[in-house]
Image (cartoon, rainbow, N blue to C red; front, side, top):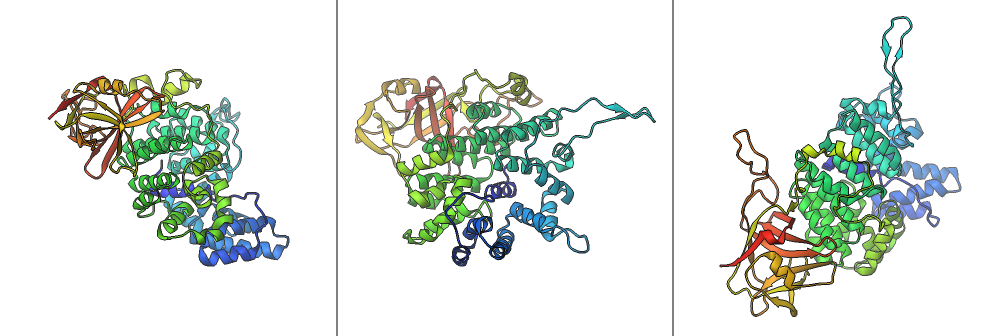
Length: 531
């Protein structure tokens, strides 16, 4: 769903749009273009919308189209060509923009433009009527669905499903997307593997449904691909971010990169850390771009490269427009800095809805019929792929271990800060016994082992069984190729995390430099022994 090219295209859709703002002059937009061309786009768009004279609007439009092409903003560029009547040249040939984009998606230009037009409008539900009979031949005439159903019904146009999804999310036609989604799924035009991230994503964007419930169920689908696993963890991280759970969100962004789209995971990790007022740590995650021509990436790079923020003043009008269209932690940091006030401002921009509970209870108001179709009971795992409550493990703790301590985690993944008043003496046993000793009132608490001098210890995690529960033709349980159970270990235990809202323990484990996972565990299944 969210490959590099597709994610870049999807994200571009959120950039084009007009917002009510104080009057912007052509001169202001032109001056900003000299310094930061991509950030001049929102200002030129505002000039086109508000300038009192036609000549100024026309000049701004020409600058806009140049910048759209320069920064590969395909959708607004296509919309410009539609308005200008330049989709084809005098010979009747498609413009290079149309041709290149259609070829890149592997679809026809007619299908591309048809979906752009149809999915930019509200979409009503379509229930196919009964076939009619040709009075001359007696043959059945099947009803032809309206757009966008007709184009998306063709399997060769599968890439345009994601394109339509992005347009619907941009224009907030969530109900229209639901009509399209379930029509395509009922017709078996999209697979469950590709449908599940779209189902979860629309829930998060619209604020309708129960995002965690959808994520939890999707993660139980046995045949989920690594790309879809990465997408689901990425979407769960976004859900946690929108709920203000920035630490947890950061962990799941990193975890998503283990399955696919590692660059995307690192960039979103950096954004979270920036909003948490951890600029130095955030900048260590900034690497090669994932979203081509994305303003938040460009801005984050400049923030990391600049010692002061004096240069930001010229960017503020543009950033305010971008923030209204696409609430992003980097835009918030540019306007508000990091820390608690900035996080509260971000949540206000997102419009987080408190009714979306982060739990996995079985009760749900959504149609059981829909759930059964998307994740049928016979295709479900007992737990999602990030859940290890049915796995047994050993904790290999050094002999000098004496305490289990509540820790302050800063810097991210750095040495924990341990204070004696937050430590309790512990004896070997199960993780359940250890956690029962440390009673906390906080919603989420992290713990680490310490020696008699209250120094953190390196603890190893070893899985007893790394099979994924599926058997090969010989009846032998198959070993997973990716995921936290791909290797028995020993893994390095970073932290034990306890979440009060779920009454659930999590283990953060790492293998080498690249593999990092947060997995839910059953405390009584994890046995601690000294060595």
